[in-house]
Image 1 (cartoon, rainbow, N blue to C red):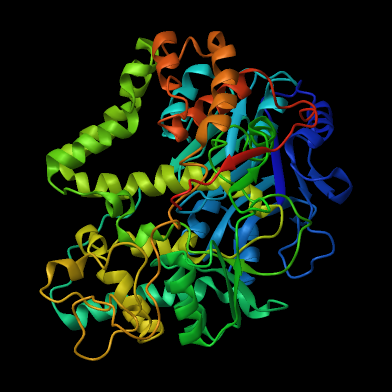
Image 2: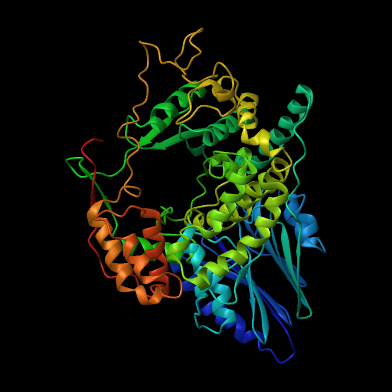
Length: 607
C-alpha cells in the first residue's frame, strides 16, 4: 500500500516546511499498518512538495515510490500494466491526457515548481482527495490525511454528508466524512498552478448501439478481450501462481478463463461450507481447467452450531481505521497481513460487464429504473430528518434529470461512479495493505472500452458469456450459482445450466446419477444477514445510547423502530447506523477498544 500527499502554497508567506512536518507527524493515524513496516521519501521544492510512504519493503518490481529528478517527482498508487507508461506520466505536461491511454488501475500524483497534479483513472478505484485552507492546497490518497493537514490537526465531521452512509453504507457523492475534503471524480485531474486550482473531468463513455451483425459483435468482444489480456500483463512476472478467489458465479469464472487464456499460472480458493453452491461449482470449474482448488470453511464452534465473530466495536474500529468512515462495518474488509508479492485476484466489480446497477434491475421500464435511481438516494426516507432528505434530493437531482433522457445509462454509470469509485475504492484499502492485487475489471482501458458496449447487450449477459467462451470454450456451460444466464431465460431451452448434463438433457434438469447438485439449504445462511438476538442487542444498545449524535440525520422514534425486533430486520441498516455513531463518537483516530469478548452467532437448526 502507498500513501501520497502533495502540498502547494497559495502565497509566498505560507510555511511549506511546517505543512510537510504536519503531514509526517500524523502518519500513524492515516496509514493502517504497523509503523515499523513503513518507509517514506519526499520531494520538496520552493513552493510545492510531494510526500510518499509505503509498506512494500524491498519489493523491486513495482514503480519507484517516487520517480524523481531535481525538478519534479511522480508517485503512482495501484498498478500500471506497462512500465514505459510510468515514464510517460512522469514526463507528460498533462497527467490527464496521458492517463487516458494508460492500462492499469491507478492514480498518480506529480509535483514540480509552482505546480502539483493528481489524476484518477476511469473508476477512481485508487482515489484522490483534495482540500484547501488559507495557505495551502492539499491533495492526497487518504482522505483523513488530507483533512488533518488542511485543518491543522483538528477533525471536523461533515455530518450531513453522512446521511448517505446510513442509507447505503457508502457515499453517493464526492463527499467524505471530513468537512472540506472531496473525492476527485473518475477520469479527472486536479491541477494547482501558482496557487490556483482547476479540476478537469472527462465524462464516462457513451454506449454505442449493439452491433447488428455476428461479425461486428465478435469484433467488439475481441476488443474487450484484448483489454483484459493487457490488464493482466503485470502478472507475467509474478513470483508464484495467482491465487484466484473463485465462486460459482459469472465474474470470477471470467477471471479464471482470462488467466487460462493468457497462460498465467493460477490456483483457486473458495470460502464456504462443503455443500455450498459456490464450493460445488468452483470445484467443477477447477477440474475443467486442471488447477488446484482449496476450500476454506467458516470458523465455527466445536459443535458447529454457531460462528464466532469479533465484537462489533472492534470490527468497526478496524473499518474506520482502514476505510476512513467511507465503508460500513457491515462489510467484511480484508484483515491486515504483512505486504506480500503473492498475486491475488477476484471477480469483484465484474458487474461493469453486465450493465452496472442494471445487473440487479428486475423491471427495465423507464418508470421502474427512474424509481430505482430515486430510491438509491432517498432510501428509508421516513427514517431521516428533513435536512438529511433535502440534502439527498439535491444529490439525486442531476441523476434524475439524466434518467429522463436515458435511465439505462444512469444505472450503468452510477455503478462505476459510486459503487466502484466510492464503495470499492474505500473497502479495497484492507487488501491493499497486503499487496497490490491486479484487478482486471478495474483496469482503466478495459472499463473505458466496456462502457461503450450497449447497456442492453451487457445487461443480457451475452457479453460475459461470449468472453468466457472466447477465453476458455466449454467453461460457459458449467452451471451458475443462482439464476441461469439472463439471455437464456428468454429462449426456449436454457443453455448450460447443469454442468453434469448429458447430451439431450438441455432443460436444466440434473441427471439421476453422477455429481450431486449443490444444496441451497444451509448454504445461504450468513451471520451478517441473520445476526440473531445477541449481536442485534449489541448493535441496538450502542446506537440508541448515541441517538443524540445522530439527531441531525435520523428521527429518534424511527431510529428506535429500526431496532424494535429481538433480531434486527434490516442488518445492513443497523450496521450502517452503528458505523456512523462510532465515527461521530470519535472512535477513530484514537486507541483501539479495550479487549472485548467475541460474539457467538448461532446457526439456525434448519441450516
